[in-house]
Image (tube, rainbow, N blue to C red; front, top):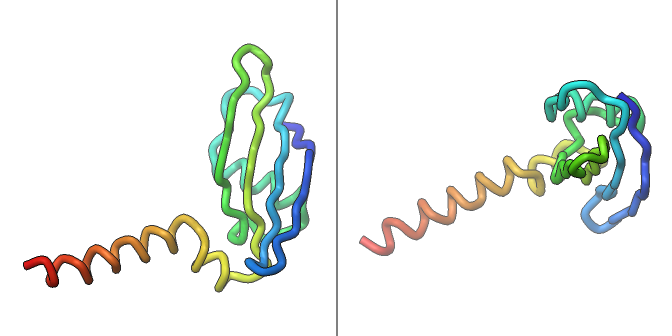
Length: 101
């Protein structure tokens, strides 16, 4: 599995950077956990702080384009990551449900 970093954009206000990468020379489609581990090795970051957002296969090209966020600390990763978003939506629904009844 060969990962090539295409671009990195620093987002200092959100304490993260957006990374676009390309995966080539892979056998069966790797899992998201395997992709996170490979990205962590390539970027020298903790895999727990990587939020893999988009995995796009190119038909017949044998390449995969990845988009991910690499957070600087666990607090921001929890707050802004996918799990944090799910928690905020659930809390908002729970708060709105008693008001509607």
